[in-house]
Length: 164
Image (cartoon, rainbow, N blue to C red; front, side, top):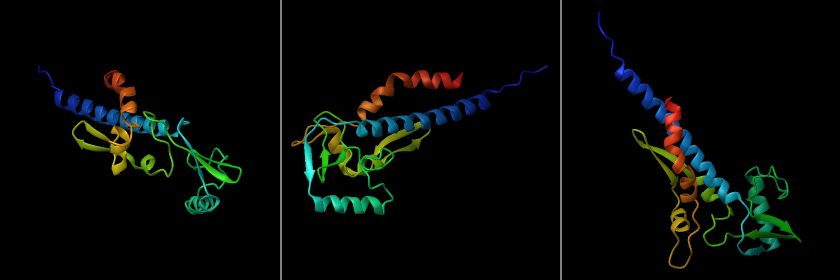
């Protein structure tokens, strides 16, 4: 009578579950970063000229977005609102996640598998780094670190629960 060893199969199963969990966790971090950018901001209000408003509307309609900024199903940027014939745009305050203006940063956040049980979450546009850490002339407006810190304490717990 012999003992059958299932070690390699169990290890492969655990690794597969961990890969899935890391993929899900990366998605949650991305969602939280994007959500933080869509929240109302407390920075300065800017007014855009009516000609600029027409250009923005034309660009948004060409992308298949609603022309009504008060349509909450619309994909127009969260900071942009029409008032008295002008588009009003509110920027983010220092140390607050950046406001969505054109959606470049929002759309560029992604995760990448870099190795066995490894993921990178970030953006491939240059201004993402400047917003995250600030510059000599601009105070930081972190968008990734708060999302990462939100899930840091739960990573081990979630991965352990997935294995059980």
